[in-house]
Amino acid sequence: MIKKKDFSRDILAMDDTQLEKFVRAWVNKKQGYHQVTSFTGPGDKGRDVVGFLTPALHEGPWHNYQCKQYGRTLPTEVGIGEIGKVLYYASLGDFTAPQRFFFVAPRQLNRNLKELINKPAEFRSFVLSEWDKYCRTTIIENGDVALTPELKAFIQAYDFERVKAITLDEILEDSAARPVLYEWFGADPGPSPVGVAPVDVGEEELPYITQLVDAYAEREGCSFASHDEIKDHGGHWPHLCMQRERYFDAAAFNRFYRDNTSVEDTKALNREVFHGVADVHMADHVDTLARVHAVMAQAAKLQPSGVLGNHARIPVKQGLCHHFVNDGEMKWKK
Image (tube, rainbow, N blue to C red):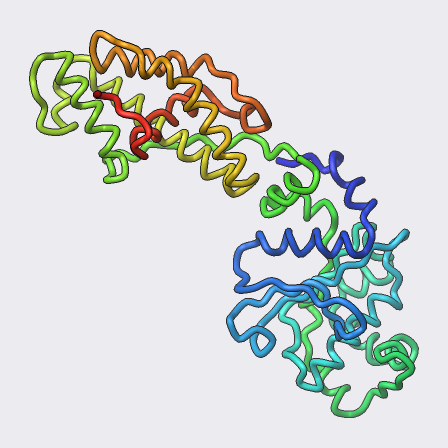
């Protein structure tokens, strides 16, 4: 997990443009959005970072992330003004009313605005009663947006429970923020989950497992019809089970870091391990199983560089070798 104290200061130091770019990158990593985009400038109509939930875009459900980087807590008048603006343009039919309206203010909201958000019915009444003070002359530059009966009815129908504030801590604790914090600040994404081998051997494993079965057969001077026959033959079954454990640990490692760092970083770690074992793999060995043992021993000794190297467990480095076999980069039996 990312430590909040490590990067909150960096985010607080962003300007408005940087915060919006950061939030867009974060929202883009969240699950459930068909498309994420930004609206900037005087024509944003109250939208900053928008997550569309369907291909219908603004004709369907969407979430608005209103980014506000203030030197202090977000003032009431700013919050009310932004809510009023987006509901005004929604009432005109420019887009549907947002399914969710999130304030993203790193220094949080002032006490009054927080209390209003926590009391949705009171929040709605406040917007309506204070429209002339906070919204009428702020929505359109040098314009006048009166609270007409139609606009009032539209606001009364809007569910203010949809309006929420997202704290800096909540962003930093969101798993979707990990790759963004890594990209922006080089944050350590932490260790990957340990992979678990399923009970049954899947088709994806057959390339390396078939070669291991051939190695066992070579050692024993016999033949095995399939990996199932290994269960009843000496100590090879525990060895095969261990290789499967390593294979799936490496798979979990690659999957986690592709999602939380970058594909390039994962590829670089894989290449380091490949080159670290290549000479041992190509050397002469008494038989195929001896080659497997030698490569596994060499992989365990490797100390890859970078953030990913710090988290590459011994089973991961060993399991990557089986992935190389699966991908055709190596062969256990020459």
